[in-house]
Length: 380
Ligand code: PLP
Image 1: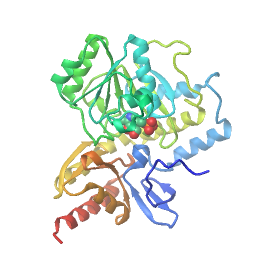
Image 2: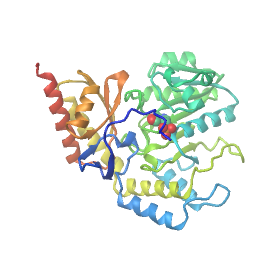
Image 3: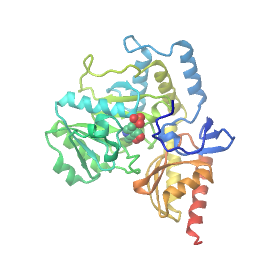
Image 4: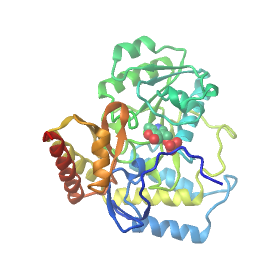
């Protein structure tokens, strides 16, 4: 059997990783400023993470959600404490799209409505409802096309006020748009969304799958604005590579048995991984670090020639270049041995490094990109 060929691959085969570095099968060392798409939060193969997962694997790896699993309660408690949503309830699942799928379904269970407001350049996943709320028509097959979703321009208060009504089920918005090119919703815009949703019984869903878990310099990016959504979705950084996702649910949204469910969600290994991530984030002060190092990188980028715009918060940074960003990214990878991400529509390189990088890694990246930008500025 061959693999179903859906991914364009780099000709690189990582076989070992530690902290912010990866080694391929030839022994070449790479700096990881992509984190496997924002997944590596506490650094590759963090010793505490490895220890906790190994211990759990030696005890029990899996049983279904038909038995008591105190690890799940502990995870909910610790997550609530660290993110500040103590009074919310947690539903555990396996991936980002599944978290959004459940969030949208819950919203409809709650108010009985169907229509969704999402935003231009959004990405919420590749399954039914989350794909419906994703602003990329080419990802949808015919069978995906019957959802009632309206896409509005981000940060356009007038357009939002015009579209929101008592017939809307949910508004779904990313804490910071990731795939769409690192676009930050303004605090004022989020405040308007929150108040209109409250007034009209619309469920506000904050997709923090990429921007959450400390990446922005707060636990969740929306916490800069002071709003409190009804539902928050998390994944990526939550398990540092172990597949796990969460739906954080306002206490007014009531559960009943059978309403949501999953075979693998919240299994022992996922909980052990997630708990160890929270412990490292707290013990190593990684949210503060993300803000400090992120601010430093952002300030330095803003001084460089060849950069049109640098956007983002903390260690979620988009660099819109004057020259071809795809080429610059390729040079970063193959000449400078640095992994980064990319948003083609916005000619933007995306930085999503582990949250525990230090000044040394920041300087390595900055001098590498500066070198490439300088080369591009010198006429042939
Ligand atoms: N939401 C956001 C903001 C994302 O960035 C992604 C993935 O990139 C998803 C949802 C989907 O997550 P997953 O690929 O785990 O289904």
